Image (cartoon, rainbow, N blue to C red; front, top):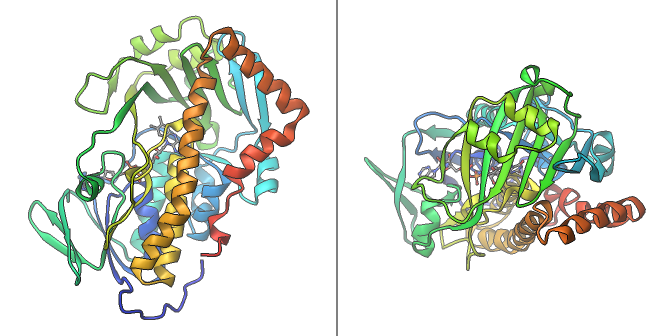
Length: 406
Ligand SMILES: Cc1cc2nc3c(=O)[nH]c(=O)nc-3n(C[C@H](O)[C@H](O)[C@H](O)COP(=O)(O)OP(=O)(O)OC[C@H]3O[C@@H](n4cnc5c(N)ncnc54)[C@H](O)[C@@H]3O)c2cc1C
């Protein structure tokens, strides 16, 4: 994205506060700072870090990271998977195989990479500092107000002003609550166990260099390599009637995790055998929000469209949001920018949220033998009608926010 000569509109934002230094908040802050905005991030935690887990970054997200100068910094941390597969939890039979690797890079003009979240986070933080973004840690935003002159966030020990505020504060967003009222997220009836394991610690068959969904009755497990193949990431999703803990994330019991996947394919059980630490997430959702912005406050990423991780697109959507918001704020007075941003992003994010939900039923073989049949049919269809699968992927991976006429 080249630096544009912005017309100095009355109502053009210059000073921006971003709430939350997650992937969405850092990406939007970086993009804005590169365009000459003065950006401060307020982050509630006392250290800049990310959870020890992997992230699949598809070409639609990679194009934005390339525009913002992050792609080259990530290359040495990445792993390029050769295929995306859906396999049977027990027999290991392939229901579906779709090429990734070179094929996807040629088709979409950007790679599909697996990245450790901490690596992406670290590179974004460094790029933000280099671009002049100020990051204030231990700054939890508690309140917000706005008037015709500015936007104000209330912190424990201070009150801070800016032209606009971007709420990138995740699924439990305070900024969303301040704009739209208290509404607890809805537990989707699914929990995710996550962990990373050194590849060298895994005994038995070497895992294939693919992103694999192991589909089973009422559960699935995803495996893929990270950091040039030195680490393996897993996400194990299990259906549960309720989530009792106060927290939405807690340390998990490795023995309990293993017990849930007894009898699964050896490529799965050997990864779990090598695991010595896991965390458990409640997978929550929210209905589509009536609006994403007020006069001077706008939401981004999980704060406005949390999604189930079954398309691996939550962070990618936050990254796409960031590009569109940076572009519109660079071109227009912020009121018009917010409207354009919401009108462009909401239909896209809502569609991906829906597709992510639909995948749960497919991966968990809902309907018993019918569920298995659906997976088999999908496999046959993908062999003989590869266009159908490709067109589904085109909608997700082929979407290029960096070339949108905004
Ligand atoms: C199991 C699982 C696997 C996933 N896999 C993928 C994948 O492969 N690919 C993909 O694209 N996505 C994936 N996702 C989704 C992705 O993790 C999220 O969509 C993404 O991290 C959202 O980023 P965010 O910046 O919007 O929010 P967050 O990452 O939640 O960041 C919010 C930040 O705001 C801070 N904050 C919160 N409240 C306040 C406050 N009041 N004041 C100050 N700071 C505050 C938080 O501390 C945090 O740092 C996965 C999600 C899960 C659960």
